[in-house]
Image (cartoon, rainbow, N blue to C red; front, side, top):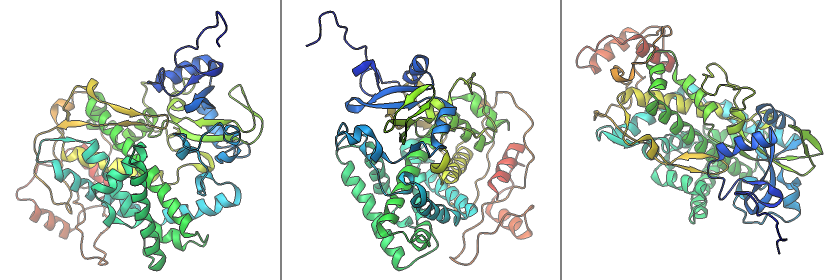
Length: 495
């Protein structure tokens, strides 16, 4: 019984007066992290579900120190004291994120080198020019599905589809990309009542892919993982395919949605793109600073007694790597509204031995996808009030539920051709303008030819006679000479 005169815990507080990262009082984690920063500094004690104790690392420098010091901190949750003492029940809602698995992101030492080495070697075989072409064509197909309607939900009809189409292609299972695979991935990540069945559906596809590539290797990520000298077992291959698919998918969906929302909602942001003061890749990097795809990563664990951010960390303590509050640490960003142009020192992709090895694929999907969509739909506008937008929020991430937009209906375009670069709308170009970067030649997207015929030609410094003739045949009438920003976009795409 509570002693007479004892006060009840403050709203959102648990045992010891520690702040809960769940339930009442934790609806806005961004504001909560700032209160914790004021109260505790760059490292704060918190409680996870079931009041399991944890530290959340709020400082930019402290996050980097933690992920870059494997002698003191590990991803292996088997050393976590609350887990060893039975405080974490097997069906704890965060166990899928925390439970140790035989994958490179949880391994250490020689085992980490073996597994991560195989993953990095497989990623290194990806031809990024071909990848960007595939992203471009996948974008065109998706936009063709709704461009004639004059309205769309850019989350449900675009952001949740483009990453899956690209990831399935990279892994070597393009035939598996469909609405059901997208739904299964989203459902498995949401943790609904059907999440286990959805997860099983995805894993069955990955198991079949592993078996096929073990029998008949091809030139794709899975085949290179199967045939790597590290000698991964089928289980190890399948688990790493799962890691790549789910982590890359969720992160890239959030990144795409965040960039599109920012560009569409904030006219100043769009004006900087329109005026040539910001490129699409720079807009993506700014989003990675302001809204990292994963708010926190669960988790890191102390291998020994140590100190971090003025706090005494004991062996077996758990810590949350937190890109969202770390990226807005006032010690490195005293003015949050200031542009971070040219600065890639954000925490969105982690750091140290476990830094995301596939981050360039995520960047490419966002860069090419956003650029191609805005070129096709230059007059796109939000179809609802900004205050009506909704997110699903968890400790791990913040996911935009829908992004309803409207635009003048557009005709479908041939997927194999480059877009006709329309003039960006005047009402969106009222912001300050500057001198755009040097322009490159206006070339069409290479036309796909028969498989194995080497039909994807590298872009030259100027269009050839054949290309000029082809462009003349595909354009029924001459188009106005593209402005400097349009020519820059074409140059940046590498056509």
